[in-house]
Image (cartoon, rainbow, N blue to C red):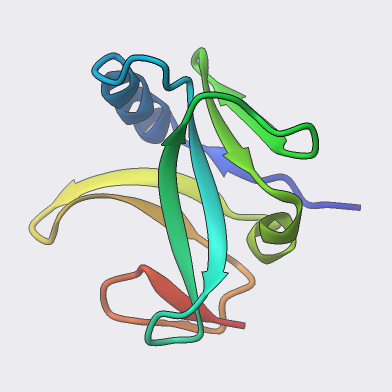
Length: 109
């Protein structure tokens, strides 16, 4: 059983705003790849279509896509968008991460 991956209203709003300026793109792909200073890193990319095996997360009329391998690393996570003194970025609150780097883009399990 996979624990849900959720998208906040702020993240959905920001995705919608970005997609209006990107013709042919219809969703934000969120992936986990090896690398970064903590072992794994998050990757965000605009995409045109979902793959057959993608998890599709919808909120407020926008979509985020997660591939099957990344789903295990992201189970129970919340995808958010923040605008603070450090800048604007998508952030993932990941209950599976045992540690993360200072910038929040890489983590370890």
